[in-house]
Length: 114
Length: 115
Image (cartoon, rainbow over all chains, first blue to last red; front, side, top):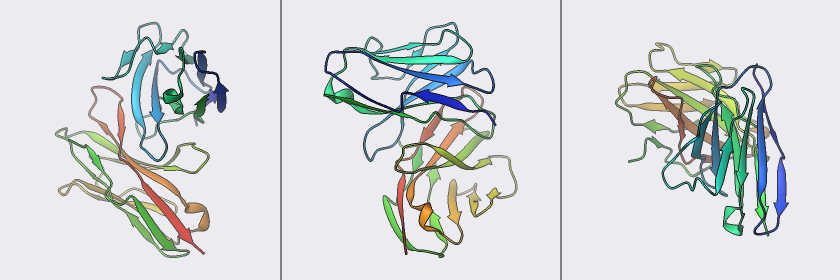
């Protein structure tokens, strides 16, 4: 089946720096990628939807300038957390469109901002 | 209002017993899909089972079955013969209609299997 490869699986960065997370669809072209954030012991919250060749659609309350999403090719979507702060520490996970009966997630990225 | 409700924040079940994880949903769409995912401590999201709103039979995948009661808007996950490796967080999720591909998640149930 389709596989979504996400990396890095974990990253520690200093406050004020930027971090880029990549999600790559390996088996087929993903024109749409969904980005979620999950705080400890909480559910997955949709942050944004990225579409190849167009601007991402952000959910209400998500800062567009803080979380930059680029979907430059059919297989690659990136999320950049800019000027990261400790409150941005979270688990970030992507998902592609998949097929009707299944959706494929990346492995997730644990971001710790110190 | 919450669209996916999982009322059990945590459950403890003896190994080899069957367990039912509750999920109710709210939608006005006639066409929708329901999912269950397992999330172990590693964080990965493992797809377990899917039920379409027009599927007449309850979905089954190995030890997993989905008790779909459309009139009650209920989609409970049943795990038969639980194993220690079933200990994880379980999320119920829904995809609504054909408008977009958004999948929304419930708050999850933490399942602990006791030896």
